[in-house]
Length: 100
Ligand SMILES: [Zn+2]
Image (cartoon, rainbow, N blue to C red; front, side):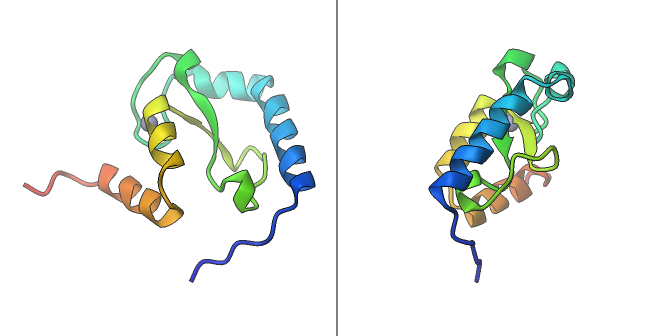
């Protein structure tokens, strides 16, 4: 099934620090200026968008531009409580037309 590498406390600390720096960058300010959530596509206030790691830091995800996306509060809350496989099916549902 899914394999996650072991992540040290040190790596987690380092990646979280990098995420803080990324949040202060012009690149990030440009990303949130659109106000669009990467996952559900909702338009919200730029201030309401949080930086989310697509692959969580605790799962070995890095604070790179490719792994950090703007995320609305609703998606952020949903994601936190879901397993990666559940989150995947949530995203698939978002991308689909209603069944009926
Ligand atoms: Zn969202």
